[in-house]
Amino acid sequence: MKWVDVAGAPGSGKSTLCDQLWGPHELPIQNRLPPMEWHDFLNEITRLFLMIKGHWSYTAAVRMNNRSIRKMSTVARCERKTTYIQTGLVQRGLGFGWRLNDLGIPLRELEHYFRLMPVSVGVAITNCPQDEIVKRNHDREKVKATAHENRDFMVPLMLPAIDIARKVLEDRGVNILNISTEGNPEGGRARLVNFASGPSFEAATARRSSEVEVFSAPPWFL
Image (cartoon, rainbow, N blue to C red; front, side, top):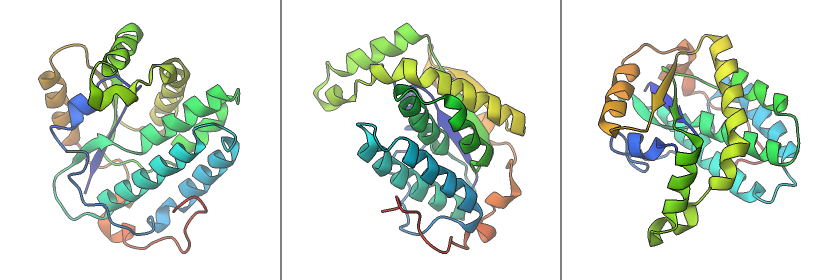
């Protein structure tokens, strides 16, 4: 199954756009090792984990990467003819980015992640003024179910990582959709669906090649 990888700062509107197209738990995730062709990419994730090991959110980073790698491996192997539109591998790269930035590690260390990252149709990056993003994060505290999701502190740390992701992916020739989330989300969803109708960027995302698993799990793959 092809996919569109949606990414952006916390509060930039990713869930508002995507969750009506693909629910966050709509796709049953397989508990399998990642595809063989992801080997070098997984090694790069391991290297980045070593770099952020001292960060206070290290455990959360491991948990989120485990889920995302399993999810996107499932998508790559899936036989459905529809296109998956949700957050995926780009967002995990941005997660490494804000942590590297927080630790004072040069963000050039993030570039190779995006050079090696598996890509399907392309990447959609949500755009919204920073003050509006911060406001949305603060508004989450007003609702009991989302009170723990105020991540405004991540925003200034993550924005430089978004710039790096965009540049590296553009240099690879990856199709990128910049999508504003200030207005009616229905218009944004329509643009996402239209973008998703494009061809795969990499033939290696075909299900048949993805069936072959890596020989051994990375040390962080729990």
